[in-house]
Length: 162
Image: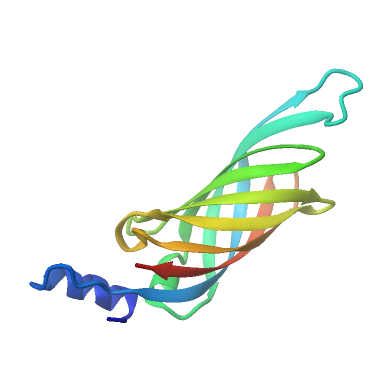
């Protein structure tokens, strides 16, 4: 059975038919503003080709910018947290957590390469709570450093629920 995400949750929550599933899919497009909240940099010994390693955390808001499903719209104004590790030569990876205004969480991993304006890479959805339980998907992002503290992240992914 296919239905919208919200309708599916209402139906499944009130259904007396065990095992009935409701799958959905869509494409999320969003834009976020992130603030650097923590940053640690470690320099390598002289002569090492990687120069530095770093880790940090960013926090901000995600704004829904496309995709027509109820599930996509749940992410509008979601609290967005990114924890990342990387180095100055090869890029790195990060953990992304999106928390809706209703408290539901969506978890993702990113893999990135640095560029002269920030970084670009892929994002993989790992599941979540509530309407995001069992969600899978993959997409891309473009992260731009605006100032030493403020950043933005244009992000999009295709998603599917079981």
